[in-house]
Image (cartoon, rainbow, N blue to C red; front, side, top):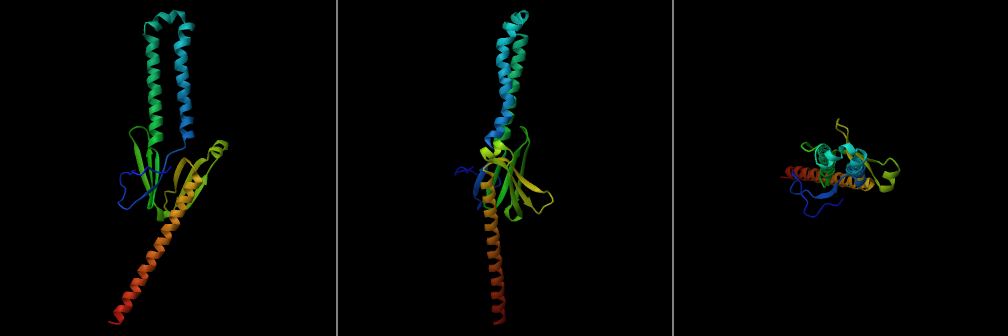
Amino acid sequence: MNPPANFHFEGQKNNEQVLLLVRRHWFNILVQFIMVFFLIIVLLLSYIIIPLAFDDFSDIYHSGRLLSFIESLLAMFILTISFIIWIDYYFDIWIVTNQRIVNIEQNGLFHRTVSELDLPKIQDVTTQVVGLIPTFLNFGDVYIQTAAETGRFRFRQVPEPYKIKDLIMNLRKKQQHQESNDLGEMIQKKIHDEIHEEFK
């Protein structure tokens, strides 16, 4: 979850520090790969069972024609599905900085959506961990409520959701404290300038 020391992302500001880099929990990608594992088993069994079950097709099978062609198509399909699942997992990223939250979501191979949320716009942060496995492995969703009409900003199936919630809330409080200090300094400066003008 902690970003590499040299990690930078497109659009990062000069004084912006990356505090957290989050991807979905590994169990999420494992569930998606169950279908792939099943297809791999089917492919491997087809090399053994089909020639034994269909003696009439054994010549076609061993000469590398129809069945070999179908098996090659299935193998390419498995590789393509595996690649898409991995790309979707690896490039779905949530970045928490000292100024904002950036959500980079990969949809398929050629479509990427980037959205961001400034810390001052955060109103509330909640977590949702549902089920035995998510509870045991400590992963779930983190929802960030904003004042905007678009509703909630969502971290989907991320590890250690409570830690993420605490970090975001602490950053929000720090931001509010900084805003209060800045406002206080601005008011003090304005009062000082007005008094200074009066006694000129």
